[in-house]
Amino acid sequence: QVQLVESGGGSVQAGGSLRLSCVAVGLDDRMYTYYSMAWFRQSPGQAREGVAAAGLGASTTYSDHAKDRFIISKDNDKKTLYLQMTALEPNDTAVYYCAAAPTTSVVSAPLLPRGYRYWGQGTQVTVSS
Image (cartoon, rainbow, N blue to C red; front, side, top):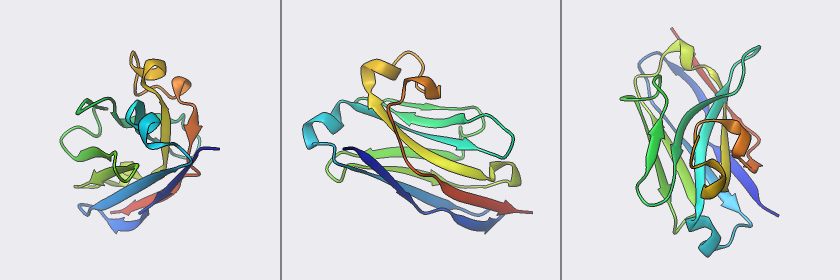
């Protein structure tokens, strides 16, 4: 059974930084390399939205709000996904979720949640002004 375990959320002042981590448990090493991983976020009353995705090799996709401020990276040896967030704004306040799927399921729309098979439990990020 595959589980995604997130960590690294917290409370910061505007302009601050946080790094989120997501470890994939129960996914064998070979399969992990063929999976795409992504970060999504959801605020109260809002739909879940894509933040950034890491596909095969060095392929990455960013939403407009994450571009130039966030960096997604994937360590296949550790089966861990990261999201380095800088210049955080109050609008970034949300629960952040890690997601995983075979790349073939999400390659055409890596920032849409519908193709992702596995989800983490979420980690809260709160940015105060």
